[in-house]
Image (cartoon, rainbow, N blue to C red; front, side, top):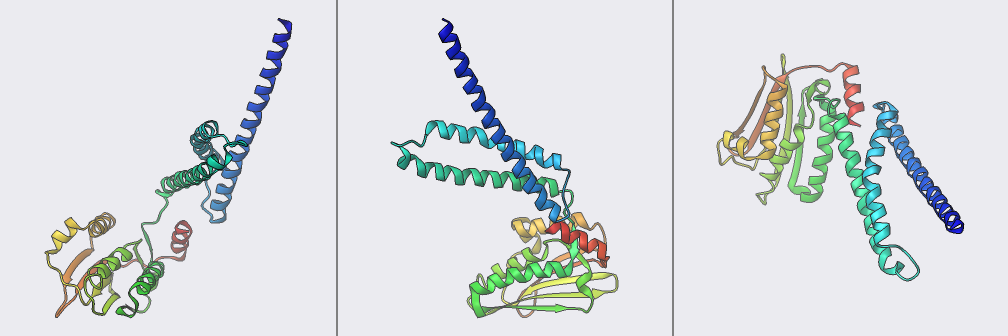
Length: 272
């Protein structure tokens, strides 16, 4: 009886040590990922208190750990079954990484939702737009040409973030995407007293339906218009119309606002 009690005590002691080791390793992993996450945000000047990163890291690894333990018990890697179970472990590891990155991206999106700037300097939006157009030009080759016409001094004026790219994408899709001939997409930005006018046009598309039907049917256009109306309550206009003899133009008219250097730096820091 005494021997069994001593044996049970030894087994319980080893079990406690094993659990303590697992808990210690788990806490170290949580601390490592929280530290890396915090260091990345700190390098971009947008870090929150470290305790927030620690809390989110505990939450993510609290979700992932049961899945990893379940897999280890159901499909152990031993001398007899390692060839069959190893590919499954590799696939599960990749899946866990995807889940982890998805959780981190969701947390980042929720955290940054209140910080993301509603407007940015036109120069930054054009930089993003040029990247998109270059990708499309690799796809369509010489058939697609992009023209840029800017009034002097307009690059530092504020425009809604990520509003040009969906309009240019729409012009490409309904222009060269439906016709085999060469295609020209142009962006014109002009300053007219206290109004900034932006025109995105293509010279091959034709509006087959009234603009109101396009706004109600197209997800990209409807979302762009909704954002536009939320940002500007007055002094704005968003129109789509046919050009003569052929072509389609989307015109945005917004109040002209010249960004101060501090505003532009804040938008750039958050965007990174």
